[in-house]
Image (cartoon, rainbow, N blue to C red; front, side, top):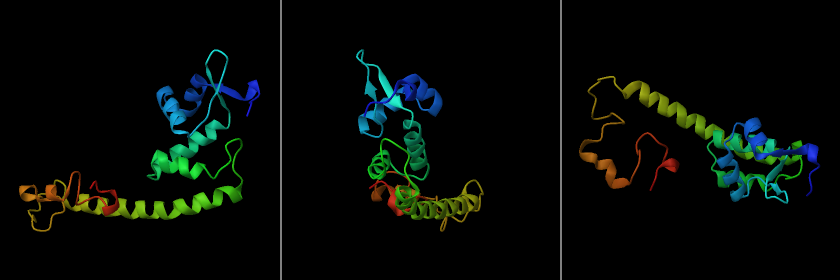
Length: 154
């Protein structure tokens, strides 16, 4: 796909417009999330619609999707133009359940933190953060009690 010169952005322009570092843009390109055309001198030029793809990536990360999940979601969207409502709807629908789960997890975490951290309640038998003798370490690395099971490192 050849992009007319007026619709191209250099990596510096893309970084400035998107707020994403040059290094991250190159990494996204390596992962296949975005695509750049190369000039004869090897400079990267991006189609202006790459800004929309970057906004999509940021939105995906905000709802907790990995870059690989974002790439998989974008595989069903057009690379050379903005998606239509019909093209976007399945992606949005899939994200809604993910967002609902994330909201529930954050509410649960907020409730635990409000009731436990620094309160001095001395309710060590039921405190979600108390971990005598590091028994939680036997289950694996990372935070075990406050994170939902799907996010625990195993």
